[in-house]
Image (cartoon, rainbow, N blue to C red; front, side, top):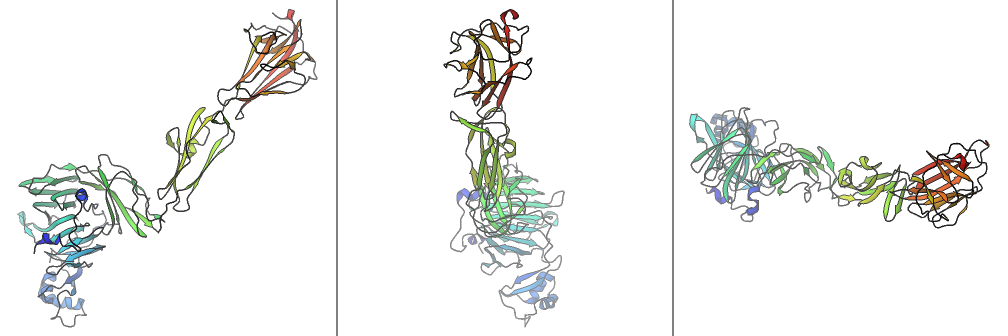
Length: 605
């Protein structure tokens, strides 16, 4: 029988992977490091033409006399001397007998078996395969076989393999051939009893110091072979050359050519999301993993079992995460990711992680509510915020729930609680974002603001001017007041804003606004007597020497400058005070109280 003909006679005509996918054909991760399955004890044998119950007993139990054992296991057989081709017979395997038998333990989706000489037919779990029997898998399908020594063989999607006849090798070691016509197979066991045949290449896995051998082989439609060794070691024979490949290494070869020098396999990616054992009410959750340095691409696989024997979905050729599948049926899955090198060799697979898909698709982004509380003001097209202001942020998603809420503050991603306030003085930019578990995102948009926790600065200085309207003139030296006497009534004190007429201060509170840096002047109408404002030094005022007070705020600007002379004190020895207050646009306030004294010029030094 021409085995290659089977690779071209699948239902509907030959299936050939596109050339661009050749390197990624059937990129299944290595068998999960779960507990090794028990050796095959019982299974189903499909009767071949000319077989008898005695012949079947001799095959699996070592002697024809055990036919009665099979008769007991198959009580539905009315006449043990009459069994028909294609009939399934329950058999028991005896240790050390039929070592070249494999049992089909897991079938996922569309898998066919050829139990020679029977034609291809749907594969049945627990069926026993003998030399020359074949397995072929179709897209997103897989099969798992277990040999009588508990060695596991995983056959990936779009693959065709045959079990061959044992080949005698040195030291009387018997190796069972596994011919990979096309596709991928992976062997996990502790013996050296198996040999892969891929075209003109032979690959012989062997257990390492830990007593385990785990290797993956792949053959594309175009020919050639690839080998990845995850545990143990392997010897490759191709093109007249022999190459040893150790743990964590891989190689590849063209038909008839020597194998390439071994290269190191990439490490396993670390899975990020979905979280282990999480439940998703959507069919397309986003899968996220940490990128691996040097990877040319990734393969994401989903299985129905933790041992990765029942393939559910296979996504090769992925770029950087995240990745959202087109849609998964409801159910429980186990997923993992493998990094692929530029040469096309698979790295180590990630650990598997479980998730559950309930149903549906979540296409709606989260709701994001952002509010600025506290002192704020808009001035000249800019937003200013003051002391005590805070951003209040909340996100909700009725579909899959909010997975992440974060901020981008001055171009850097930050946790929301780190940037809600207060901030460093000055300008900032902030944006808030929320993402649901389906990968939908909502962003608030960038908001520019200036944080102003600084109150206005009150500047005082002496100025001269004929009418004291524009506050022009050079500053004069400050006069030091030696002593003075308190004034009970300051009827002669006047004030003026820039460009305005002088008016009495009288007994009321005055407010000045509407300017970037509002100011006012004070003077006295007295001639010989002078009015002094007590600061660190005493400022002497007269008709031509005025005191200028200015409120400067370089951030949000001064909203109002106010002043008043406090009411006359009951104590005649106590001075009256000039109270000056300034407030900026976000509520920061400054206040000074200047004692006012009246004195004669002779008293000034």
